[in-house]
Each structure stands twice: as structure tokens, then as C-alpha cells.
Length: 183
Image (cartoon, rainbow, N blue to C red; front, top):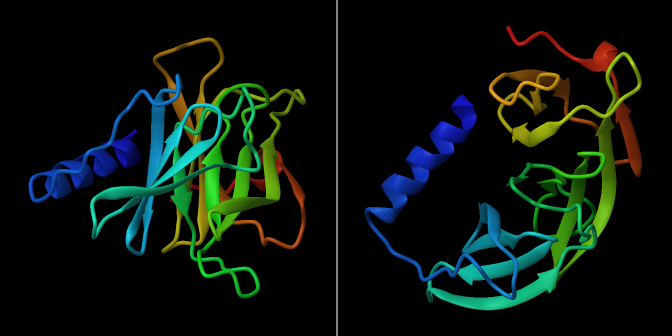
């Protein structure tokens, strides 16, 4: 939860200097996550819609559906890594599915479209997909965090830390054995 709080504080400090016209409810889809790279804010809506806000012109330049777009792709969080694939000019984007199997989708954005390059899934010791609320990349430490709702308790979350998987496999299955110490 601290990571989310830090993100909110960052947005508050930015919004104190600039105000951008971003409509939350768009095409009957609620606004969810946002990630910034270069001159663009990538604004994501439920279902996998991506809108690209040009931070210089303050206008929405493009919109497209992520390749991972589906009814379960809530995109309540999204973040760029520092991993580049081939000559793609934008680093890999990590998208939280939130519903369904609660996976992490890794997309490459280029030329107003995206390409799904990896799907990351976490299974607990019982072989179940726990409720992963957020998948968050830590670029400094080169790790991936999963914020997981503990059992059936809405008020308790557990943070799991994993090595950031290389992008050479289309499907990654993480288990408890893959979790790293948080310290």
C-alpha cells in the first residue's frame, strides 16, 4: 500500500503544477491505471483501452486496445520497466489483469498499438490463483511485486517480491518458491 501512496503523492505534486483534461469515464469504461513514458501519459480504462495523452500539447493523441484487452483486463495498475525488446522504442509495460486469473500482462507499445509478449501468473501452495490486486515493477531493484489480498479478508494484503522475469518466455508461472525476501 505504501507504493500506491507514493504514486498518489507524486500525482498530487505534478497536478499542483499542471492540469490535464482527462475524462475518467470514457466509452462506458472507467479510468483505472496510468503510466508515463517520455512525452506521454498512458491512461488505461477498464477492459484494456489505452489513451495516449501528449504531455506537451495537453491533448489525447491516440487511443487503442491493448492486445491483452478482455473483460477481465481491468488495468487498475500499469507501469513501465526498463526492459526493451529489439528496437521497440518504448520499454515493456506491465499491466494488472485484476479479475479472472489476476495475471500480469507484459505489453510492448509501438506505433499506436501494443503486442502481448508475456503473461505472468502466480499460484499459491494449493495451486490456486490468489487475489493479486497489483503487479508493480521496481526498476531500481529489477524486481516485480505482487500485492495480494490475504485469503478472504478485504482489509489485509501481503506483498510478494519476485525477480523480474526475462522477456524470453511467453508464459511465466510464479510460485511461493520463487518469492524473494522483502529485506
